[in-house]
Length: 332
Ligand code: FES
Image (cartoon, rainbow, N blue to C red; front, side):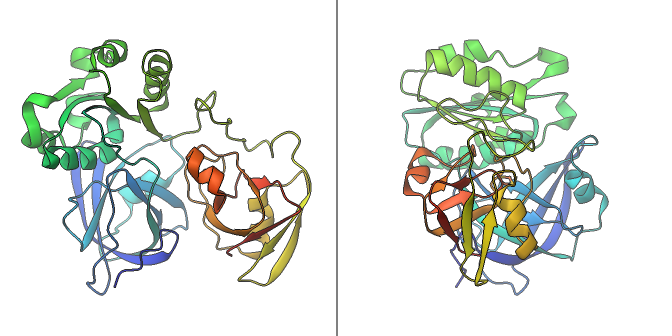
């Protein structure tokens, strides 16, 4: 039986690497023993630890009815932080990678209509969503922007699902996605899902804040420049948020108690005792350092958790999160 704990680690064998578009490959990942993998829903992602030890998050974009494999797609980013180049340049087929998840911070809500806005590799979670809403017979429309047609992955698969609802907008042929017009034209009550580069997400967020409050669901690949509406701006590598004080952290499974001074992040302190703890962005937007809270009151500074999850206080991003109680107990 597959382990359903979204924070559990597992091994995944890279069964296939396939070129999906210029600069985009997909990875098919399976259980090394041929078993079933935990189920997932559109919008879910996994954390993959690459051979170098780098941890990156990738949205699942394969078929939902295949319990034996996960598919992710990776855009080669020459000027990125190195993970994508490693995926593209390593001979990964046959290798076993450590992974965590799937977890979902970008879930589909019920709505009478869906407007999907995707930019570049941001199509990956949207592809899974479209498969699901199309299977349900729901009303939907996709506008998919990219630099050039040959860099845009999964265009054929999308057209096969619903050619008349899929609008491919390569920038060199048709310019940028007209997000203001598209949001304006969406029917009342529509859910708007957006995933893509920061500039596009910011533009859509700005339009929706004024015209469609509450309708927008976004997933981003970088820390928001001005924070998400209603959410604190993620703390940066410059240090913990202003006013952050000293507290004590207990690592329950390790049996350790550590002091976190005001000038250090919780992640920094935890890593000294638990060097294997997963992390990636260190800015509170990727979710890879998510850690279960067993006791105490976490103080959230990430842009990953929903308001409901913050309220529950049973999980946190330890790269930017701190503690509102003198003692915080983590499941580490
Ligand atoms: S490392 Fe990315 S959210 Fe903490």
